[in-house]
Length: 172
Length: 165
Image (cartoon, rainbow over the protein chains, first blue to last red):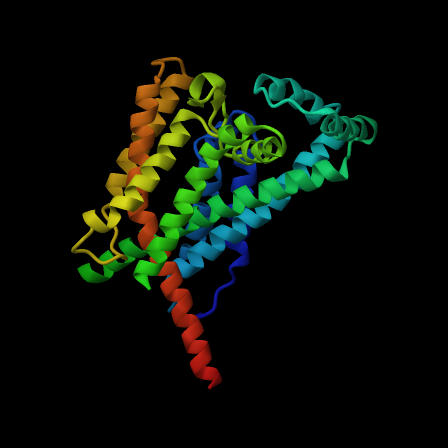
């Protein structure tokens, strides 16, 4: 029996589900419920890992679940940012100019200095489809959000699986 | 160890909720605080739609998340505060039946789906009740999860240290 399992495949599966649910129109509404899509992706990762170790001497630990969820979030944060930025690069969409009216609606007005920075980023995107500042900003936000909710999703799923495994052992 | 993890969990939950309320407060103060406020709003935009008509306002500025998300986090903190009282006789690693969590999530999901599909529009009250319930229930699964996570990490580190010696 195998005693050591590769965690890479579950992490890839989980992060692909997260990315798909985050970038697909209509389906991405699920993320408006406290990043439920990210939590779901982490759950897929942990369930895949649990299936993988079913026929081994290993038992799913909450530590593994948390780490898998966290890594799924990390990978998906990178993937989402890369795909999102690529889509911006090869389309005529300028997210800054689209977001400005929304920010105005929120009453989050910029002062002159800030506005000049925002305009500079917007011009960069309009001209070449890419802005380093904007890319770093997106990357950091995705990374923080995805890893937090991914970790929570992994933790929750592994805790539930552990309980059901313990129940099965008790019933034997 | 269990109590330590619990207090860390409680502190983090309170900090998270504090950030949500801090955003409109900082916006009200203005000046440099406005920049921090904008960062907080941006950060929460990853997980929430932040629509005006579905949010609570503080001094004319809306909170960093919508009413449903806000009540989920309120429920979360309330659940964390109530946890030691409710699970007095149980261990910190015991979790309730999965059906309790599924029922709460299903209620929240149904409330959202019925509204999106236009079958039954929801209200602040339904969003608040379903959100609070989900947040409250979720704590009883996440605190044991956190406790187990840190206990396992600690035992691995202990084993490593023992092997080194």
